[in-house]
Image (cartoon, rainbow, N blue to C red):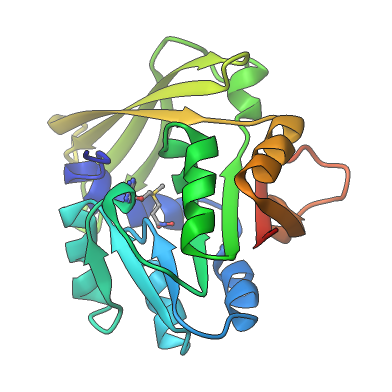
Length: 244
Ligand SMILES: C[S@@+](CC[C@H](N)C(=O)[O-])C[C@H]1O[C@@H](n2cnc3c(N)ncnc32)[C@H](O)[C@@H]1O
């Protein structure tokens, strides 16, 4: 099983996050881990952009990452942060807590089974999920390529992200295609890469049922990474869950 995070998608991952105006998840993770005694697992620790500062901040946390390239980036940048290589679905272990920030959980099939399996590995779980309002409302065009965002690369070229999606509200499935395009100073295309990602998303009601059948109760729920107003649409929901 491969996650896809290779090539330009891996190398540009952090640059795109840094260019986003979204709030960081770091304070939320620190808050959750501050109440954790003992070793915790960070599932899908990627390039280490969150794992590294958490480990440097003294949290007892080990990463688990399926993409070799993401893991290498993490180890280059944060050599002190241990990262286990491999797929979580094949990983056995018991932890004080497990953290799954940045929507990684939504890449997994059979969410009910995954929540039950997580319950076998820990009794405290941190989970961040996103809800695709922009895709559902039609704000983003469906089934055709659109310009998503671009960044200036450290080497001076431009890194452009084009996206396309297909959404099925009833089944809660979102298929996103990404096209990464590297352009030279005169706009000429130097390199492209396409990736496909299938994600699940959940209505509030479906999610609460899933948590319950997975053996979890909600300790805390944080909307939109703790930013914005109370009545805003919830694009991102973070949960502290406790085993029942
Ligand atoms: C959305 S990215 C988030 C990365 C990181 N948490 C961050 O916020 O920067 C998802 C990460 O999870 C990894 N991943 C996906 N499926 C995985 C699996 N089954 N086991 C371990 N890692 C996985 C991907 O390779 C990728 O690095």
